[in-house]
Length: 72
Image (cartoon, rainbow, N blue to C red):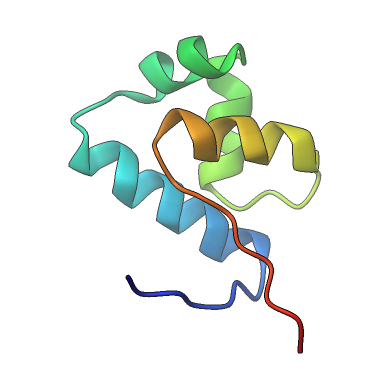
């Protein structure tokens, strides 16, 4: 398992997009599973900084990505 720190929203968006594509899902499909609009899904993948953390967590869960917190 490769654990890496996330530095900014653009990195989270890139990880979500890469995983979504690995799964062969469209933004619309992930949005539906996450109970979001396709617009919010698109903004999240582009790293828009206004995404709420709860929204990010729902999308990460929808594409099978986990979040780990490591104390410094």
